[in-house]
Image (cartoon, rainbow, N blue to C red; front, side, top):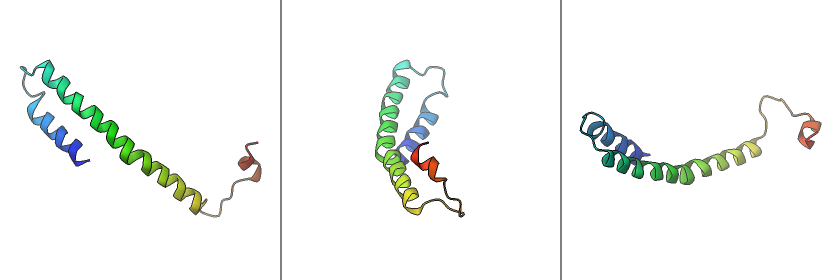
Length: 75
């Protein structure tokens, strides 16, 4: 996550503030940023969601509310 914040800080100070910014510079920045975002999503968010779902299954519903047996059967 620090790398994304760093890239955003760099883009904020280097690109967009001047009218002479080249298209190549902006395309290059997004060419680095988007794969980095995809990598972060796959390596952090997807495993985190799976871990959270597993934890929620083990803990079960809270507050004494139980699901109706028919709703668990898919009826």
